[in-house]
Image 1: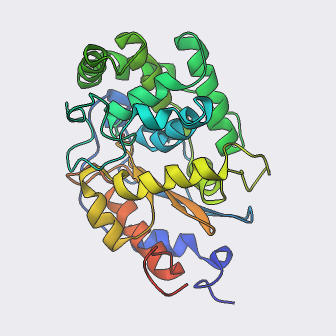
Image 2: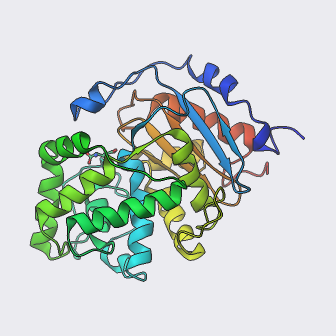
Length: 311
Ligand code: GLU
């Protein structure tokens, strides 16, 4: 059997060496902890829907999950609201940057759950009466997706909370529209903690694999969300996950994904695998340059393009 049919045989260290030839991009500087990231860090992991884990060197390096948390916040909000979250947040791509100060015309809802406005809202919709209770719920949910107890870095969360002026602006705007029903500062605090959750590439690939496996974590066998929720989340990753680069991403890579300012990308190929890459230098749309190259190669080599006919 070749790697084209069996991801378990894929040599991720070889892919890693090829991707290291890809240069360019700049490390995000929005908070000191991200600005200090090692630009040469490159970790890759795959987790199949059969629960098999494939990893490269540096796949155990920890980083803050940042926006790669957004699909999972959406999933938890759908789960905890019994689907009502779908009425509270749009699902249309914006063609704009991740932190654009813009809501859906007419409804005042965030345009989709993959941009900051949407994730501020979905983080406010999970179970819990206050910020601490919602944080605990999010940590428990993300841990179930990853199959390991995850925690957030308090310093990263504090910096994001203090320095996230655009997130505060979005939260206040949604309060003014009546779409955000918790306090603006509280909403930013919970979202900042969710972005500060520390993961490695294997954790993130397992989270992507749980979505690819219809909501059941394939490594530990635990159901986290329903198959219907997993399908909804992956659909919105496909259309909105790479912000204003989502169209190009779908054409080139063809695998639903979510990018993040830490340089992480999580991919979810339904029925096949989840994958994650961490490499901090970003292109102008906030997508990891080497992460994009790795995703291209994975898609091509494993025949993962949703609209390709190789598989
Ligand atoms: N914590 C970041 C922010 O809210 C996440 C953005 C991203 O990863 O794209 O600005």
